[in-house]
Image 1 (cartoon, rainbow, N blue to C red):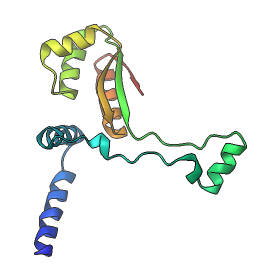
Image 2 (image 1 turned 90 degrees about the horizontal axis):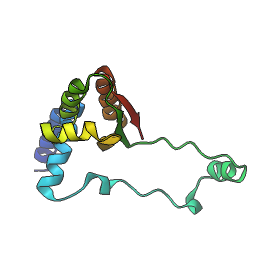
Image 3 (image 1 turned 45 degrees about the vertical axis):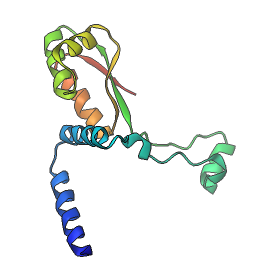
Image 4 (image 1 turned 90 degrees about the vertical axis):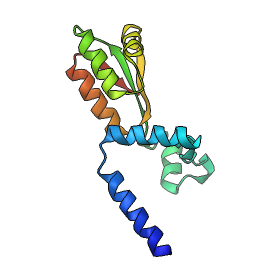
Length: 140
C-alpha cells in the first residue's frame, strides 16, 4: 500500500512540475481556499541570534551583516506609463483574481501591490510582463 501512495505522489509531483509559474500560484491559492490554510504559515521562522553559526556570529561582531537571500517578493506597480490599457490587461493576466474594474482601480491608484509573497521567479516574470506593457515596477 505504501508503494501505491508513493506512485500517486510521484505522479502528482510530475504533473505539478509541468505547470507554469502562474498556474502554480493559482494552485496554491486554490488549495489555501479549499483547506483554509495559508502557505505563508508554513515558512519556518528565522533562527534566533543565539543559533547563528560561528561565521555568522563573527560577521555580526565585526559589523558585517550576513547576506540572507530574500525568498518571497511583492510585485509593486509604481507607474502605469503611457499605455494604461495594456498595463490593466497585464495586471489581470498576472493576478487572475482581479476583475476589470478592480484591475483598473489598482492601476489608477499607484503605487499598489499586484502580487504579494511570491517566489523570485514569479516576481521576475510578472515584472518583465508589466515592463513590456510600459509600466514601472519594483520588487520588494
